[in-house]
Length: 181
Image 1 (cartoon, rainbow, N blue to C red):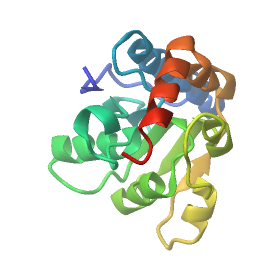
Image 2: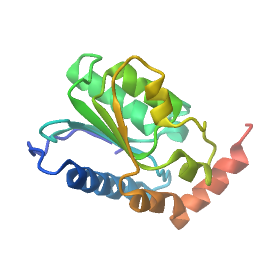
Image 3: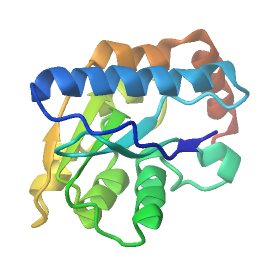
């Protein structure tokens, strides 16, 4: 399954730093499940309630399977969450993502009104393996009049391991051979 609707129950914030790290490790572990499939991806996203920690939605990148360059994990997660809520506002929610959002994904997070964006690996990390638009998520947020706190790198090594996994390395080689098609 490339997205998941769940609500594991309320979890009140105790230590935001420790909870962010735990949530990122959980997201990285879920995303790592794709590494044993025919369509491995290092990009996963989770939307959780900013106060209770209840999960609204999670998704991973599906650019290849959906033949859609906008099917990034963050955009898909936001789309599914808005559809679930039957609205376009995600105010009161936080987006966790295994990699710093690209400008398209960060803009989508801003338009959705997310409270926070928390990421693992950086755009520079991802660019070692695949093409990236190298504009930091914080810069996109700063150039907007829509408030959103951007925090990272949280559990960077756990998220970077998604990129370095042998099955992902094979997939990157395949992606590179298809560029320009």
